[in-house]
Image (tube, rainbow, N blue to C red; front, side, top):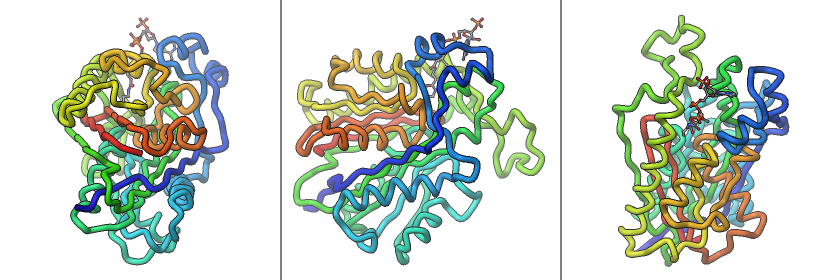
Length: 322
Ligand code: COA
């Protein structure tokens, strides 16, 4: 039996940092409000000419280097993003060209903040069925481009960045199980109304930006993350005590704490980057993973639970022996 394991991780954050104090000069808000309601202190913002593929390539290169393989050994590329460079081709194809990787399957996955968990689920299926040996799985987002910088209820919450992993074949289970779900009926609680087939050429200004009913999203996120964690542990006959680290989607510190509490997981065993990165959507879980791998908290052999929740609604989890 062939399994998949995480052979290497990588991350990239744009150079420009936007603090809560900077935001105080842009909208009617305060550093105290943002920290108290979300736990966010600062976020990284892409340079004017920096795109989702630029960040994806940077994170991808680091993951390949960490995996100790040649770029040419990659035989599948999946990019999770809702903020692609172009309508087409896919960001994954642009990444493939820029990494000079020949003729591998390359495609994007669109599942908002759960995108990386969806991409990981798909890449794992490719590997265990013999369809790939080294998959480059990236979450990369430029949410600064879909934020209304005059809307204080959304613009303080998001940031830009990319995270990546190389999934490689293994005799032992690295990816133990993956779980993905969606419930499309909540479309209008969190969305960017503009789209290709719905008035793209003459889009109204506000339709081009994130619109969110924050309170309702908050409640649904906490309950759903609680249930996906339960589903994952029960499905593997494990309990919270078997986990070394929880690596949650980084949307809001209050959501992370409430979900950890439901799981009975002490915050000392939860990876938190939302204070420094804000919500980077599909990049948030692989970025948090990369930070904790590189600072030595996450070690080989650790049992990890990834979980994410986002627009759609979509949600997902993965139980991983790192
Ligand atoms: N600065 C100051 N005040 C702000 C503000 C800001 N940046 N944004 C909103 N407010 C105000 C609101 O206008 C409201 O004022 P009112 O009571 O006079 O109407 C007040 O703060 C409280 O708003 P409310 O929405 O009830 O706050 P909250 O405690 O729910 O926190 C969020 C707001 C958005 C931080 C929170 O709901 C949240 O994080 N939701 C989930 C968002 C998310 O993670 N989405 C992505 C999921 S992947």
